[in-house]
Length: 190
Image 1: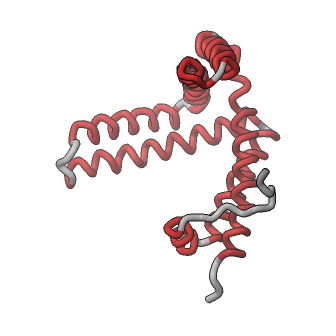
Image 2 (image 1 turned 135 degrees about the vertical axis):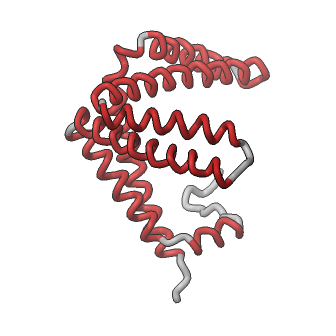
């Protein structure tokens, strides 16, 4: 049995990348994620709408940049043009109609969550079939049923998405803050 306090060696190339990454940037990421998570817990509807509007501006700006890149970069011109136009249209629509944009975005995210559950379940059944054991197969079947229920009846599950995002953002924020201080402690003295 292994010692739970035993540390796992980190490969040298990862250690080098961590030494060059500023710990305070990880701290800022963690604080931002924690703040978003807490806002989603306190006011889920308003925070979700605000985040969707931020995504709208992000898509508008990245879409415009993609369209401008078509002029400079001739590779994959069609993809850049299509993704740029789609991003600009989505950004303008969401900024212009934040409530409808929020409903659409949360609905699409809910459907994607359900589809993801179905795909993970199918992969688990495949693993069970190839010797992974019957337990993983049962869990895979359960994942398919739950994922299909979410994807096919997504309006019923849409209300849970902000809460799910709140939990994920809060956990990511705490992990980011802890990781920042671990990076700071591990950083060589200058």
